Image (cartoon, rainbow, N blue to C red; front, side, top):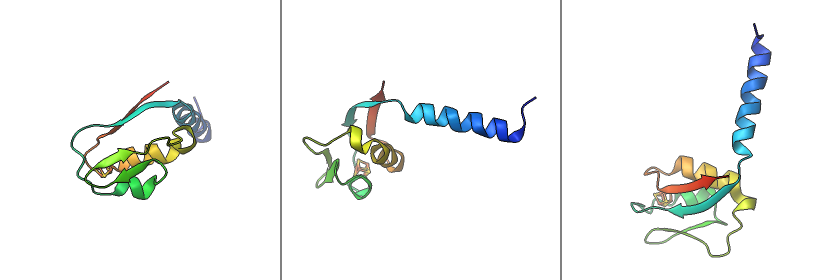
Length: 84
Ligand code: SF4
């Protein structure tokens, strides 16, 4: 039987592995309400006017953490991507 600290370490390792997956094919599906959250969280990737767009030339790899946070925060869950 595992101790509590061993179980926590395993959970953290699994979480880290998930976040080490490369993010690709970032896109915004229909339904954006232009709330502005994604631009607040990841201003180097998202721009919001009538609706959110992904900035041309945005460095996706360098902003993965912020992109994941923006996707989690999006109230209508239209920020989507695939993982490698
Ligand atoms: S967080 Fe979602 S709804 Fe808000 S502007 Fe960005 S894509 Fe649109």
